[in-house]
Image 1 (cartoon, helix red, strand yellow):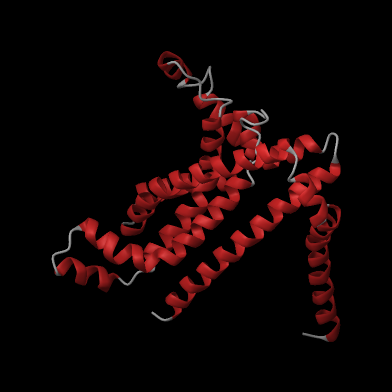
Image 2 (tube, helix red, strand yellow; image 1 turned 90 degrees about the vertical axis):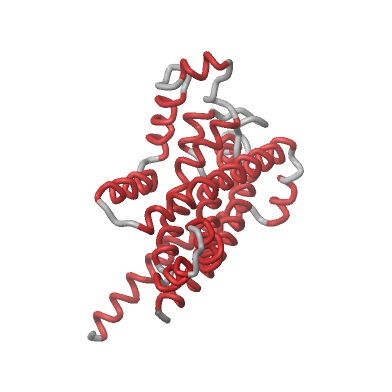
Length: 265
């Protein structure tokens, strides 16, 4: 590459880095640690933190319980039907969050496909903490399932075959061989899913509403605070930024371990 081409490439790279880093720098400056500590004393902020932690941990637990078996099935076989299932699982990643919320509302809202069933049972799912959990599950599960599927596919098939030859049941093969070998990658996928659940906004707003202390998560509290107190909004944004960074570092360490295992095969 010529000097001119190298200079152009470096300039383009620096421009992109500036566009990515300057907004984050501005957020850190506006929501300084002292302001963040002050904001954490607000009852409204504490309620949003509580709702975010409770709902995101519930949705993460559901992702792990439901997504791990699905990822194992997708990793074990290849077919057109399972390919369609994998595509369906990945679809929420590219859907606009507002569209995801609208779809959830049409499916589980008071007048949705299952709304009458829920009403007959005596409860309403929409605009409740359960709706927050379902919205987070909808948008975050793909991040875990995809990582888990790739991790299970990376297991040396000979190890599984040996376990089966020794008389291990399918369940024992999974829990004794596949799960321990994939645990690091699964933790990374869980970190990604948790980060996505914590940051969910659009689907939650449409399907669960913005009720303080009930369905108002941290992203929704930022949206509310922007109307009256931008410094509190910046402090909450800084809090989410720190959590997202820590979870991303955990996911990257797990991904690095998975790549190391792939390269050693």
